[in-house]
Length: 474
Image (cartoon, rainbow, N blue to C red; front, top):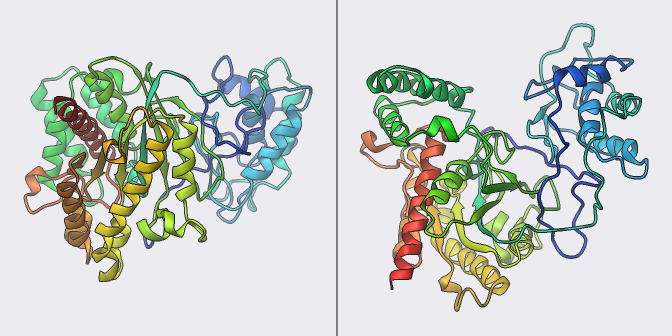
């Protein structure tokens, strides 16, 4: 959505952990240290920092830096060092190279092996009115070197090795900011509060009322939609028990091709996996689809998404040589998955809903062309699995109430999405609450809230499984 804010996580190259693609695109498992970094261990490194500008950042606690600064802190350097391999004594060099990349302009930095996002912009902190200096993160790398028994803990592996996990059924998810998953914007902390309510030892009726009140606090909330969301969340049996944990048999990766020229690595799906901000539809999809599978297999969601993008300019193959076109990332994601992609899920169109009528009128043709090209890539990677490109299942996630009611061409884009699915016998449309009946609605904020995102992920999984079952029955 070009005129509205959205949060982007910046995934960066980690030598010895994730390497820039040269030649064949790479999709592999994220590497991690043998144990999580504790505040106590991190503090031992921070104590060695000559400067400790703006303090510590652990487990999602943002460092407070000057609003005009974009440098990582010494504490950040310590944390990066913990997640950096000590390969032939080059760990410090690797750590400092990431400090340099992470200190580029922008408020956020996402390390592929650290789940929480580094947030670099905030209020001026006491004693540090100008924010951290450019050298401070590198100082943290040096400080960690003196504590080698505690830091540089990633297993020493060859950064040029690309090993894709076998026997995994993968799904390509793509689109703009709601596919990214900006689920904290409508109401920060909604997810955590929702889990507390579901865990509370009270009657179902009291839980329902508490959930409605919670969802009514979100931006652009509607009492009917809040009630509907609360009802749908309560129907997800034992949601609070499994959703907060790392999924044992499902992974996700999140590549933002506007920020990186390589594919992000795969990690267990969870609310803190770093596959969104903090998560998108992939989270609930991973749980629901895993449960619905007739033959239980590991699954992987390969997500490639960028907020504020249009289908034609930013994603179409015909514009692949243009600036800010990300067709290469879709192509590489399919190629790197080595024939394991089973379906394509597309969640996009808000940007065209804001633009001139011509863009919305052409949306159907452009969507048809995009799907054709993605299907072609998927079939090319697995010709024995799909006899024709039309055999590749496709899920189109319909736009929500915000484009439908508030944007000039939202209804036209939604109509194009509906028409595409009607014309394609191997595609399904997933509803997200657009329409005049608010009692069936979901979040009406431009970025779906956490509850709506879980509901949408659940619907994608059920819709896709129904489509697969239908094709098998034919």
